[in-house]
Amino acid sequence: THTTGDNTLVWFMSESHNTYCKEQHTGLDHESIGDNGPWEVKCQLAGSPGPYTGSWQRTAGGGGSASKTTVWEAGHRVPSIVRWPGRIKAGSVSTALVSALDVLPTLVSLTNSTLPLHRHLDGMDVSDILTGRSQKAHQVLFHPNCDAGPDGEIGAVRVGKYKAVLYTGGVPDCSGTIGPLVHHTSPLIFNLAVDPRESSPLDPEQKQYQDVLRVTSQALADLLQDIREDNTSTVDYSSSSDPNPCCDKNSEICRCPQDDLPGTC
Image (tube, rainbow, N blue to C red; front, side, top):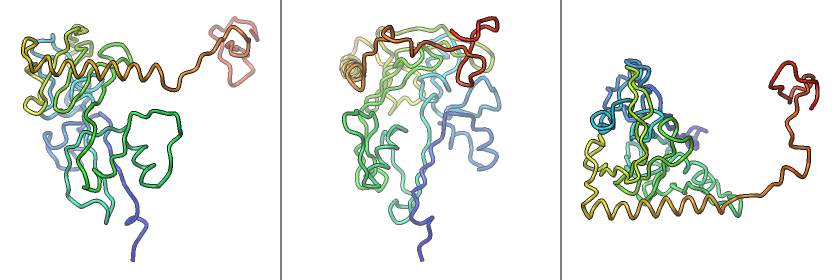
């Protein structure tokens, strides 16, 4: 007899947050679950980033956080667990490069639904990865800034095993130390396969660095061009008074910036 649970896909994905409570309830150690981005300002309650320490920030970047709200690995790398009896092999493990952006297109595919036309989604269908039929995943991921640089601006580009870091510093650690916010016109490039701690960037004079830089720069340029072209509209707000802010104190949908403003404007 099959139950609803047997035919239900459960997809758990951690938000970059503190690991302290998880450790208490699961019995797992820091290294087991540390790659979900502790918030360093919470000090000992923040847990551990495991091997993803963003060491360069501490040794060469003036200190400060290398976890939550940064583009270091501990700021965005999270674990994911998927359960689907009969479809996903129990105990299977994948190191494929996937993203939370993949959830929507994957569920659309699994339910034989369709996505809206004329929309370019950043996510991809990873159902073959979940079911073990393929390990083909993203070759490129983009990591936007939060506190470590302008909000929403791309602060790091991941291409395969390499990551180019464009912004460093600007986020406090437990002690309140904040490394200077630096925009690297020549990005720091790390080989995460051999340097998950991001301690030793590639030498900019070496061919390996230059080859990776060429690929990451082109990937970022393509993304920005795609953003400019996709799902855009042009609006002339001067042609009508409809979009003007309202400040009617008797209306629940209006907000008045000052108490002494007249009732309408």
